[in-house]
Amino acid sequence: MQHVNIKIFAQSSQNVSVADAIPVFHRWIQQRDLPELLIDVADYSHVPEGPGVLLIAYEANYSLDYARNQLGLLYNRKAAGTGDAQEQLRQAYHAALTACRRLEKEPEFTDALRFDPSHLEIVWNDRLLHPNTDESWRAVQPETQQFFDGVFGPGKYLVERQGEPRERLRALVGQALSPAGPQ
Image: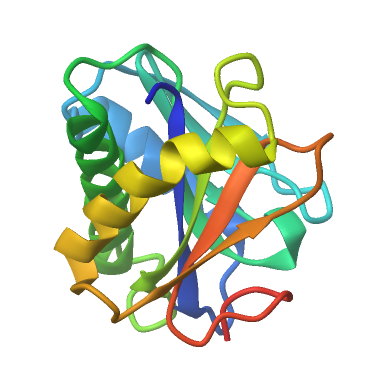
């Protein structure tokens, strides 16, 4: 299970500007605050419903993302990972969660930004390995369910496949999901 993306949605984001992540991400690069080799920051905050502000690293990108008009922290694994599917999912989820918790503690976001790790989106960012088909969904669903059973407990969450065949394979994960996304 390669190129897994995890987006943990913000539960509160009053007065949050994604552009405030620019100095934060630069500090993370200077202080080497994450285990990856951090390279640069890219500002797409001017793009409506776009990728926001990206922290570019060698193995993955992090972004304070506003895709589909839903603020969240997106972890985008670019490099092939090691280990089985459970290890791949665990690595992506924990990298995203770690970045969320760090952002919440940054002075630019204190008391303004909170993430809800029980409401997230998972994307398989490789249309060749994981096209958005019923067959691909059936292939990833058991591993996905096993992983989130371990995170949330069996039967304590919902998984809803999203999108159509031209999009990447993705699903919303959490409680009280609707087609519009997390509540």
